[in-house]
Length: 517
Image (tube, rainbow, N blue to C red; front, side, top):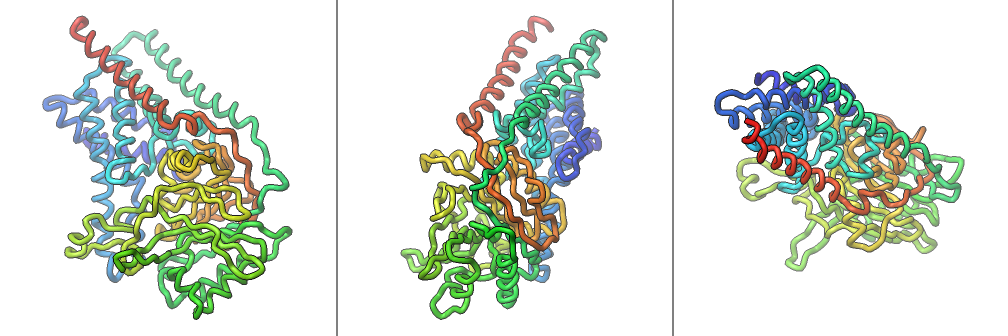
């Protein structure tokens, strides 16, 4: 039974892009069946089976986590064998807890599908929020972004779609109940009906897809294919800088209005490059033409009142004007990656040899709560730096703080950390869900792939993608924004109602069970 539990999680993980083995979704039905057949000590067995399923799920979904430790192999490779078991085993605790809750609440007949979906979705929401959260590969993001099923995220968000996906995928377990044949036919028809509803809504939504207008800004995304093993070395600064400038100046049929360089494009603090004595200030000015804007991922330093230096992972907007280069906007990353950009319990961790992977004198500091940027000559934009693109509602919350909705989302990321693994491809799919939820296009820039221009339906524009290991540029008009989606208006309220439905079903079933039994 434990091996089957592990297989259930493996199957569910393999259903996600880039693997795309959608029959693997039946892993949820297998897990539901395993939880309904626990013997003695049912709560303990339920937790173990749920944890093992989670171990398989996150082991496949997060195996790329070992790759960053080989960038500086001399000092950090020893942590790689520890990282994946800790990551997968820790995240699997949420699945173990969900299974335990499901078994404790109790279940009968068709009701158990709704209870199971509610328990899983609740703990997936907790996974996205506890200890800063890590909502990587939510069950609702199993569907390829831009596909018909993925469009439901515009209504209920990725968490609501997780509830729907788990309920739909677990329902086939009902077909193995000891019920009469007509009841099984009804169950099968209901399953097909809800699956058809998912596809029908998506098909209807994708029918009307307005093209970019001829006056929309022309954006150039630069992907210089700089391997992370070279990228973080300061002695390679001149070579890396030249690579970005050369691609920025590549001839095109029309001059781009906006140029985008990815997260932490250069192995240096931007303040040092712009210092009066630095030769890089004039060179950066000459990298773009008058009237152009450069949106550049950069590491930034700032002196704090106590005399200490704070480092930020930032997006800096530069505009070339007649009198030189002008900074027209700065966004400092708000959600930092634990262990990657800062070390929780840093003093204790340092004593035992752990430190964050960031190649800076100190950990990064978190920026203020985000708001859209409005750099001169650029439509209002919400930056999402790397990890921030995982979080449903991030842009919506920023919009509420500012009182204005951006015209697009800019996701700069340094997926070079993950090499030629599944990580960058998964990250592209997850980031694209933010476009569907918000009804906003996304421009995505990475140093080694995958860079892309994505419309408000989560689809990569034709010819607007640079894959892993590609060197080049993307020139594309900014796709139009849609009217605010239901999710943009109400956030996770529909998801909350779905959880309440699960709770109500569980309550009613529990109240009436003694009368039947």
